[in-house]
Image (tube, rainbow, N blue to C red; front, top):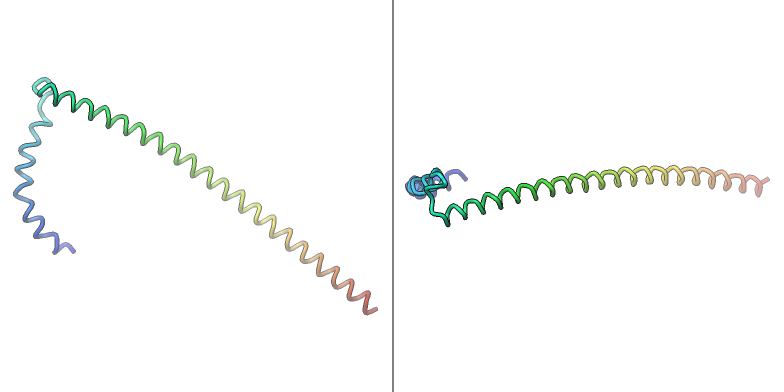
Length: 108
């Protein structure tokens, strides 16, 4: 798989330096030297990134609470299942004992 990527890397590599040379000055200039429109766009992007980070944090907390709720429900379901199995075993033993008693009475 890596052998398939080598020609692609060789084709793209010369352009990476050109793109970086053109892009790096735009990001390293102080805000005062930038065009006002570009500066405003950068501020909007930074604000949007901050809002996205806050939204992701809130979503992560909600997801954590949801997963904890699901785990609690799974534990409760396992407890109920164990209780139902115990009830089934007790009813099986009692019904077997009553069947045996009935057969003993009929035979005797």
